[in-house]
Length: 280
Image 1 (cartoon, helix red, strand yellow):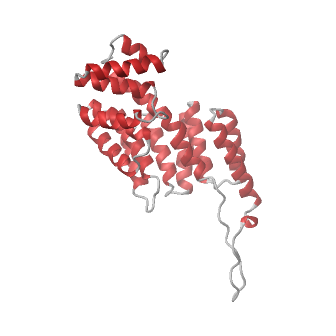
Image 2: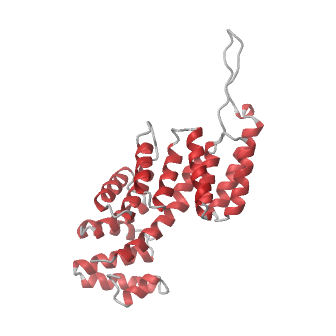
Image 3: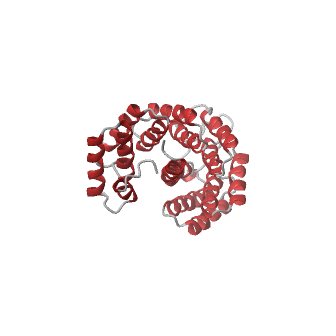
C-alpha cells in the first residue's frame, strides 16, 4: 500500500498547478466592466450601450485588474496587491477585485485578510460562483473541509454556471486531501465527463483510482495523458510506472523507467524509480 506521505506530496504538486491556472482564470475572467444602463426620455427608444458609456472609474478598475491578474500569474504578489488596491479605490463594488485580493493574501500567508476578502466579495454578490470556488479552495487548504464542500456545492448549484468542470476538479482534489476517496472519484469522474480534454483532471482521477486499487482504470487515464508529447512529464511517467509495478507488469515498468531516466534524469521521480521506492 502506498504511503500517505506519497499521496500528500502528489496532491500538493497538483494543487499548486490548479491554483496557478484555473483559479486565476476564474478571477481574471470576472474583471470586465460593469454594464451601464442607457437612459432615454419617456417615449424614446434606449440607445445601444457601447464602450464609451463605461464610466471612467470602471475603466480604471478594469485596467488595474488586468495588471493585477498578470502580476499574480507571475508570482509577483506584492505588486499584484498594489494593483488590486488601486482597482478597489476606483470601484469599491468590484467583486473580482476582492476575490483576487483573497487569493493574493492567501498566497502571502495572511489568513485573516484572505478570508475577509472572500467574505466581502460574497457580501457584494452572494451569487458569485467564482468567489465560492476560490474561497472553497482556500478553506480546503485550511482543512476546513465541511465549509469548503458547502461552497463548492453552492457554486455548482448556480443556474447556468459554465465552470462546473473546474469546480468539480477542485472539489475532487479537496475530497482527496480529506481522505474521502469515494467522493473524490465521483467528483473527478464527473469533471472528466464534462471536460475530458483537461489533463489535470485525468491525472488527479488516476491518482484517486490508484489509491483505491482500481489499477486498470487508472492505467487507462494516465495512458491518455502520457500519449501526448505536450503533456507528459516526470510526475505522469512516475505515476504510470507505479501503476505497472502494482499490476506486476515488469516490462512496462522498465520501459517507463527508461523514459524517466532519458527525459527527466535529474528529477526526483527518476531517483525514486532507480531506488525502487514505489511505495514511498
